[in-house]
Length: 284
Image (cartoon, rainbow, N blue to C red; front, top):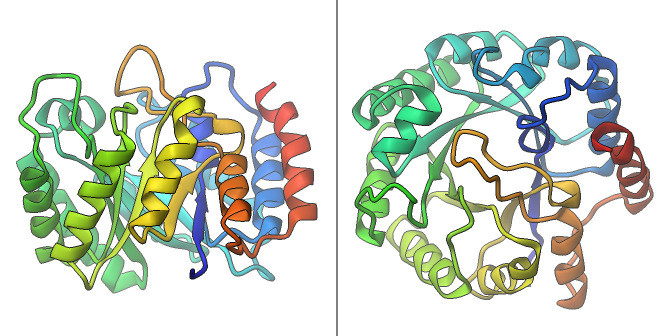
């Protein structure tokens, strides 16, 4: 069946909260998540504090973390060259994620740039990553359609994926930003992209209502997906996408589905339980 790699997403869970979470509280929560042993931790971002004020202290949080004994990769989101240059100054950050949208409207809303400009930025971010020994990852945001009426089709998604790969991207996350996917569309699009680009690590970053999450996870696992982005308690979503947020798929839902299928998450479940308990102090 193969092991599953999980990227836990506290950054996604925190970014839309209006109440500022104290830096020390963020750091303690992320440290607990590091102890769980996730393959990757989407922990913060180097973007404009005006755009995402909740994460204006990402560098300060990083200074409070003890990463010496762990194997979890730290992932930071960047939206421009300046953010990438700030992120790579931190030795403990291993992955830089760029939110590339399969929607002109959302690219403008999310990064204040056109798709053409975003592709130029990706080219520069990839170069910065390679010089500094970091992994560049691109999200195919609005990968399952968009609420704006922008053109969408599997072929359009594949075309943009191909352009990103030509720029040096070898890690892609197919992102359902507003929860528009279905089990059938997940299976079809994931299969289409994985067959078109067999040399690329392809994962799923799904936002979903809780009721729909289980069937979506089963559909993805059935077609061979082994990389998932999730968040404890299903918190989060993209504040730039719509007025009403659709949260992440809950990590505990993914763990339950893996258990039912006899698949090993390879996580420290005692540390997981402690992180789950502390999450109430972080999010309420």
